[in-house]
Image (tube, rainbow, N blue to C red; front, side, top):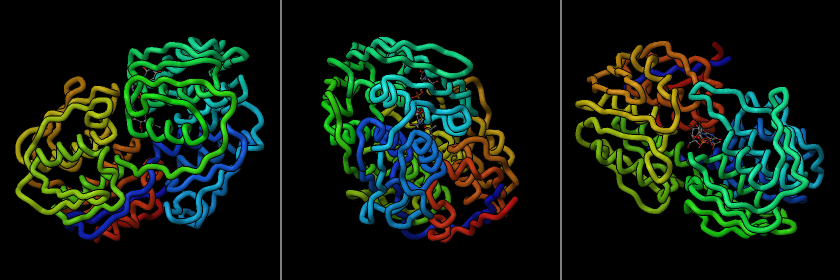
Length: 430
Ligand code: EPZ
């Protein structure tokens, strides 16, 4: 296992290019199951989760090259380079084994496409995870409404979809991958499916646009009511995956906390309204033009309250990184997590760096300090690890972040990108 060592206190300077969105690439890769042939995907980020998805698709007879990140035609080559070619003509089988699903719960995204294409699926139930129980009951309830017979056996979901009919589905909790799974089941179902209270996250819209490029008929994209008219078959498609709004927000937090001057290139502006709004409210000076956001050192940061909400609200995936920023703001900030029941694992690590944070229920009260001190800290989940990097970049002295494999899941070339901004950061074996 590796660790990342950061010498904090250096204002970041320069430009950073935002990569393709992990949470758009994962459902889009799963969707290649829906149509035999060669799909051309651009801006697939070079992440551990993408490699895991590659292993899962490989076990289903679908191949794509897993060369070194960035080599043309492999995950990480940018929109201009050769696309990632995903050949799904050899699809066989319908299983997603436990050993793959336990390392990446987003593997459940093959459930909908397998049900649609193979008319059956055997997918391991994802276990819990650091941030919460994260059941998939709503995914299963929606499939049953479409006529799929669901059996839970030995920790697996067994789905029999000899009948797959359109249905009216209402999600009483907004679920991102639940919406994605049901949309992928519905595109090849008989008749029309209406999904109400659908997730409106931009990544859901990106999947819908990819499915449309394959020939699916979907109305209401980017709204909370999706109407999907089932079609007989779909064709492989070519698609450029959207930029990652959470990676962008993470680099914004790092620029702001170090009082640096940083320009983000390829930033997905329309999806950053809530994030940019909160940064501006906290006193961060930022200017934006299409695809570029520049943060400049401005006045002192002050504490602002934030509640995580489904899109277009402030994203839960930015909660930990924003908390790190608030730990050095003047005054207090109340951070309320409304999506997951246990997403404050980063608090105790930030407190070890000198932050003043008290948790009460789903609220964290942050009282800003003048400085943080570098310390050895432990990463527990993807975004908690990102918040420790953000804090370490501003802390006095050395911060050692252990178990950085969490970071590899969601941040492409993190050490290289921060080094390019002048950070003193390096990765080494534990
Ligand atoms: C997606 O997870 C993202 N992952 C998460 O990003 C993100 O935090 C989350 O959406 C919320 O935006 C991917 O897209 C791969 P949910 P997902 O279903 O779909 C409850 C990251 O850091 N729920 O929208 O699993 C659930 O417990 C990751 O990149 C049910 O109760 O999240 C949670 O409290 C972390 N039953 C809430 O809904 C269900 O059947 C929202 O979960 C489904 C969900």
